[in-house]
Image 1 (tube, helix red, strand yellow):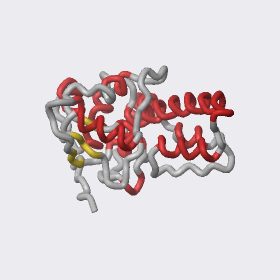
Image 2 (cartoon, helix red, strand yellow; image 1 turned 180 degrees about the vertical axis):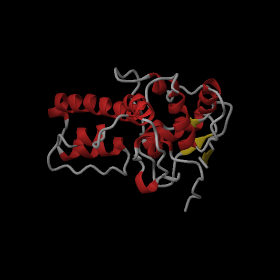
Image 3 (cartoon, rainbow, N blue to C red; image 1 turned 90 degrees about the vertical axis):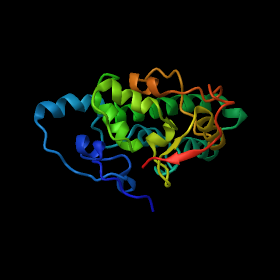
Length: 216
């Protein structure tokens, strides 16, 4: 069982709830905040009970979305459930575009969109097991120096978020698992764009072996 981190869960502290639920590695501690700080953060992290992905999958009656599974895997299962084959390509494409939007909106709801909001970077540091350094730029660089699958940041796998030693190793993991995050989505905020990697053409493809390490 993964060792529980003693850092505070920023999601729970800021929103009173956490997308990882009981699987979260960080303590859920409520911090009393002024109404001003609550309202200023509501737009960054959202305040809806139903997630964007849950709302998307709820559009298809009879399909039961497994929130603990990879969203990409669940979309594939949805396609099989609705028997979207070659004769239903238009319907499948329409659903896939809506799925991409929901995935991007869910990332935004959890981590925010403003690259100048230090709370977003503190939250990412918390999820990645990084002690947040002082200053906005230092926080951004600390997160930028990691290699993590963005799907895992939205729905943490059972074994926890994995940090990879290189873009090449992250690329191999992403291709193997099919956990591709949509690029060039209209809803992508600054934080998400900052974290996108070149999965199909990694920059260090011939330099680093494919190893990985768990966030602590």
